[in-house]
View 1 (cartoon, helix red, strand yellow):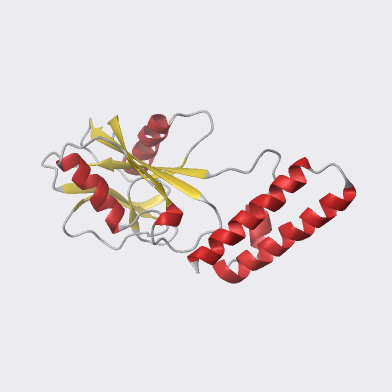
View 2: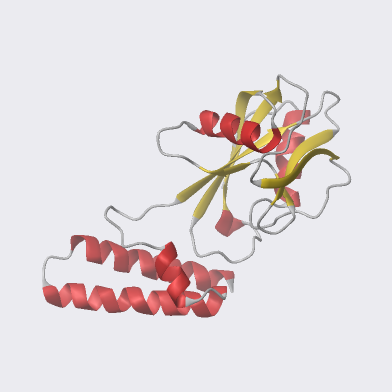
Length: 206
């Protein structure tokens, strides 16, 4: 199922690129039809309504590219616990983070998201991983996403959950709660956690 969705995403990207660069009505008509077919196929595979997908995917005005999700790994002082935020969307837990913002570096996004979701101030230290979601068993998603995980050290201690999350708390690495797998997987948390414990700060990438 994931491989089919990946092919549909490629199909949509071809249609979007064609609409962006085509210079005659015949080509635009063909690419518009291809765009519609890609959304209909995506609807069947992902379970999202076609009209919802149209709203999610505005017509492109530039070359279509990958969306970037920035997540942060923050460990407790004894390095046995990891900081997690409980997502409002599904009630499950994830590393703090979200979509990269235009005008902010990945480090700045990580610092902002941690503070907004957990109230903690942090110092970003290292890029631990860049995951291509296609290469990991996440649930199907319409967008093509790269996920960056940045290791951050807490410089404050009082956790205060943000308005856009249900909770924020430390969790034992050996007893993680139910995770929001659209956002992060247990295997990914364990990978970046072990890199810190092993003092390995060479970034993993797919």
